[in-house]
Amino acid sequence: MFKWKLSLSVPAILKTALAIASLFLATFAFESTLENSYAAPPGPSKKLSKKGAKAYKINCVSCHGVHGDGQGDAGKFLKPPPRNFSKDKFKQGDSPQNIFDTISKGVPGTVMVGYGHLPEEDLWGLVYYILDFKSGKNK
Image (cartoon, rainbow, N blue to C red; front, side, top):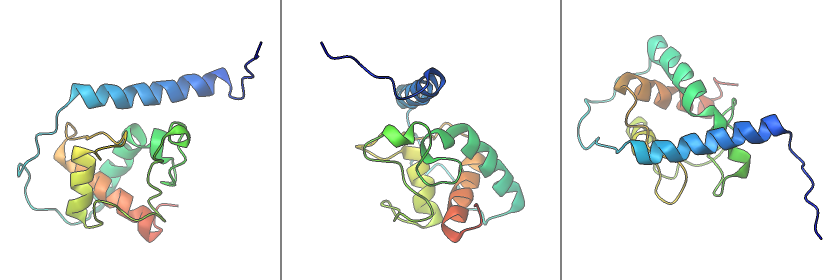
């Protein structure tokens, strides 16, 4: 009989399971209702950067990782893997509006759910925080 060998610690498994479960719950709990509901993009600011950093730690780290490299605890197990913000191409476009739409609506065919339920200011903060990974400001 085949014996399973546990290669991850129990806390790591629980942390990963919690992160994946939260992604699936978010998928079913919220619908994106963002069709033309927001004003023009604000420019980057320190206030938005702070909001983005906080929102990123709460909503994105489990998949995209602390350094935006796609190596979060849950991200290591996802197919397709989460975007590495500093190296990978943004498939839905790399303008602030494109990134806003991606965060708000999610990416079909992936586990990247929409976060349209977040306050608009937090969404724009995430946009600029993610763009800072690309430019090397968030290392």
